[in-house]
Every structure is written in structure tokens, then in C-alpha cells.
Length: 98
Image (cartoon, rainbow, N blue to C red):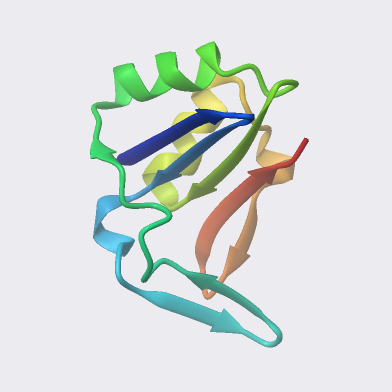
């Protein structure tokens, strides 16, 4: 998983499965564009990713989570529920916006 955190003004956590970087997925009028730099963070083990997610309180941060492994890790961390997961071309994603 790639994890990127930004703590300038608004706290932001972007988590994406490494194998999805550089790809675009489109379904109807919706798309996941993973080709830019937004999700290009540091390769991070699951245990550390969970800690990062839990340390960045969802009430104080925006989360962008894309991919099977990343979404499942966010569920395990208690950041999102399974009901909050959406899919575009069978790629799961979740957003938590302030």
C-alpha cells in the first residue's frame, strides 16, 4: 500500500493499493484517476498503515482510500464501515470528507 499524509491546514490521508497506481477506471460518469501524484506516497506495511489511519482522527481529517487491500485495512482500523465502500469497475474505494 502507498500512504501519503498531508498535515498543512487540512489533514489528509491518501491510501492506495500499489498495483493500481498509474491507472484510470471509469464507469458511467464516475472515474478513479490514479495516474497523477496524489496517491504516490510511501510503501507502508499494513500494521503501520492502520496506526497512521487511527492517529489521523476521521473527525479531523479527509481520507481517500482506493483498492481492495487499502479498503480492507481501513475497515480493520475502524476508519470506515463496509457500508461506506463504493466500487468503480470493481475497484473498491472510500472517501471520508470533512
